[in-house]
Image (cartoon, rainbow, N blue to C red; front, side):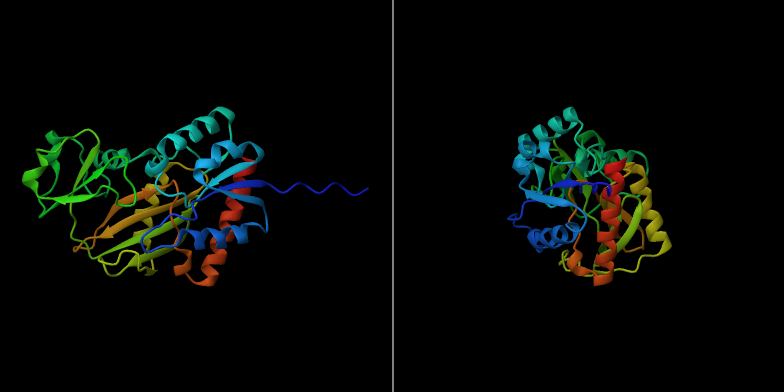
Length: 278
């Protein structure tokens, strides 16, 4: 008798299809991506608030365009706690050191002397920041520019510290993002106009650019998963890290050529199979 067919892996795909992202359509990206992933997986979509209740019947939970966690922090914390207690596989794995764990990594990378926008979280450390016309103040638990404001230096000393980060407002030429599956570079996109940060175009990354981005991917130590390294190009040509997104990075797949999109899905599929077998 022929051997029984091996069951297809079952994935719970977490997304907020109704999240009103500025300049992006989360729903379109996840509808297209899940349609492609169904070639290899049995797959169901759910809202992030429902993930903890539904995940028991699946081989892994894939967290994608689920929106800023701060909108459902208590629910997300409960999901993490349950997944950890049960040993549920979560993709990306929950030990990420980037945005998944908050913005502490910006302080850690600053202290380590890596090429990141200088960041402090105490009034006593303001002198470590370079001079700037304005400074960026944002919540440590923030996301998607929520709570961000620009203030002059003379206001910084009077702020209430403990839950905020302070950075110089960088005069940059453009922003650029590098997209990885596991440790494999997939594509890069940039916003030529700093005032239109989500009008993205394909970017031809140099070896130096990729060395910059890989430095942060290596630092994060995620064996599996999707990461986006966001950087800005300063007037003197230097790249500085803006964000290391390892929780639910929007992929802007509608901005890349069809063959690049096909290759990304193939790499994500491979990564998921490897992750399930690890």
